[in-house]
Each structure stands twice: as structure tokens, then as C-alpha cells.
Image 1: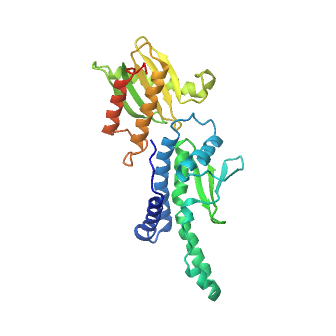
Image 2 (image 1 turned 45 degrees about the horizontal axis):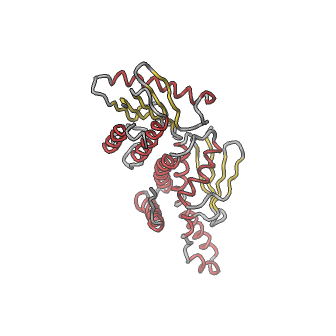
Image 3 (image 1 turned 180 degrees about the horizontal axis):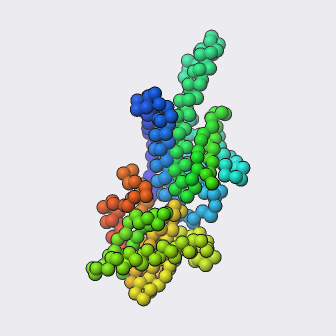
Length: 176
Length: 143
């Protein structure tokens, strides 16, 4: 049985969740808001991995589980696979998505463009702010990856890197 | 007839255990399930002795006793399903089929946002689904 979810609803829900946690519940404590959002992602990933690994043999090593995240898991979530996977063979994996869906509809505050020529300083701070707001939206997918891997028996830490948008990299560090 | 099914978490903590007998032998059945956990561990750690396919979720017959046969299933998320039956001529396909349905029911139960991972499954709907699956076991073996 295939169940579908409207993409725009998920987008709006994600945006609303991030704004609620950042501006309402924990307005002055961004780290706490980030932790809460990550925890929600963790639970989602935990439950999704249970469902999506149902019809497959057990994974024999970490790489196989990571590959599952890159291919099948990502396809289920975003209808595309991870574009690039790098590893140092010592427990660190970099999963790069060249066009991450949840950032695709996000735009930087237009005031940045206007202010750019007039006042450089304010542009930089605005850009910083935008990057910060964007990184808030990435705690949720990070949590999803961490939850999925933890449920598969791989404790890890996941962080996101958006230095070259719209590409987005997720760095997975497996805890020995 | 299936006399007992169990779901056991990755730290060998019981998540769900239910016997389906009239007699007062729940303790004995729990003991059988408990013993089978060691067999599961052994199968997983020495894969060469295990069934037809490496790393398959279905672990096959764990051990036969005088009156019971015990089957096991281990998911990717290290959750074990144990099935105790009194039928002595069970077809593998039936057991596989049972575990597949059981796994689906389990996944639906733990996907409930109110379920706390690692805690016992208290869902009434899950219990009902399980007893339906247990009752239908072996009935449509011709199909």
C-alpha cells in the first residue's frame, strides 16, 4: 500500500515547526531550539527506518547501512538518491545532495540584495542571519539520519554543511 | 496451533509477549521464549551455521522440543520475533508468511507517535491484529 503526502504540506509544516521553536518556545535559546528540533527528527528517522528496512536482509557492516540511507531511504523521503558519498574509511561519511528538496524553496531575505551596494556591513549580517535561519531548518533532517542509523545499531553524530548552496552535505561521524 | 508469540527488543528486553492457550502454562512458554534468545544470539554470531541465506531476517527453526517448535525472526533494527507452535509439521512458507504479517503489524504499532521506543507495546489494536494473524496461521496453507 502506497501512501502519499503532499509535498507543500510537509514544507509548510517544517517551516512552521522551525519558526515555532525558534521564535516562540525558545526565542532566546537557539541551541535548545536546535536540540528539540533534532530530537523530533530523531524520532521520525527512528520510526521510518523501522518501516523501510522491513523487506530486506540485515546489514552486515556500517557502509551497507549508509548506502541504504543514501539510496532507498533518501528515495523514499525525497524521491532522489544522495548524489555523492565520501568516506575516510574511519567512521566519517559525507553525504552530499546537490539539490536538497527542503532548501529548494527557501530564499534569502530580499533586503540583502538591495542593501548590498549601499551598506556592505548590514548585508553581511543579514546574510549571516539568513544562513543561521537556514541551518535551523537542517537540524530536522540531521535528526532523521541520526535516528535511522541509531535504530540500525549505529550510534553517530550528524551535522550539516551548506557552504555551497543549493547543495547540502550531511556529515555522519560514527561513534566507535 | 500457535501457543505463544513474543517481540523482544535489541537489549533482550521484552516488548510484547502473549500466549494463546487455555491452560495455565504462560510461565513455561515464557521460559521457552527466554531460552530461544540464546539460540538467536548464537545464530547471528556464527552465521555460517544459519539457514539458506546469509543475513536473512527469517532465522528458521530455532530448536524443537518434545511438544513445541520455536521459530525466530530478527529485523534490521535488532528486534527479535519468537513464535512457539505445537504443530509438528509446519511448512516454512507458512511461518515466513506469518512473520511478514507480524512484522507489518509491529511496524504499524511502533510508528504510533505515542509509542515510546524501547517500551512495551500496549496498543490494543496491535494485540487484536496479532490474535487475528495467529488465528489465521496455517488455515490458508493451500494458497
